[in-house]
Length: 162
Image 1: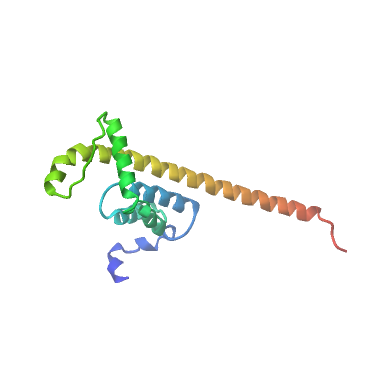
Image 2: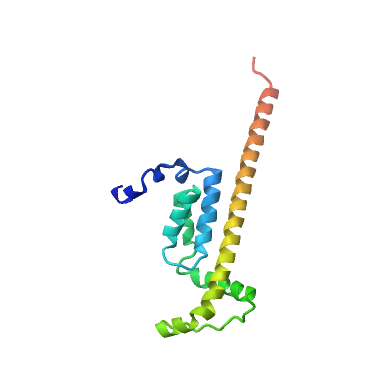
C-alpha cells in the first residue's frame, strides 16, 4: 500500500501477522492496556506499540475495542474511583455537562484521578492478560505434547495385525 510506504519494511516483520505465543501475549498486553486509557485514537497508539513490541498487530488493534461506547462509562468510572482512592480523594458525584466551562472547571478534579486510575488499571490488566495468555498457551502445548506421547505409547502396545 502506498499510504503505508513511509513505514518501510517494518510491516513485513512476520511476528506482526503470525499467531504465536509471544506475539499473541504481547498483543493482549498492548491492546488491553490501551483499551483502559481514555484517549482519542486508541487504535493508532495500539498499532504503534504493537509494532514496537513486535506483537500481533491485528489482535492488538482489535482488543482496543474492549472499550467501546457501551463499555466506556463503567470502565472509566471504575478507573476514576481507583485513582480517587489512591489519591485519597472523595469520589465526586459527576453530573456531566457538554460545555467548555464545565470541562475546564472539572478537568483537574476528575482528570487527575481518572488518568492515574486508568494507568494503574491498564497496566495491571495488560500484565495479567499477558501472563494468562502465556500460562494458557503453555498448558495447551504441554497437554497436546503429553497426549501425543500417550497415543504413541498406546500405538506401540497395541496388538499387531499379522
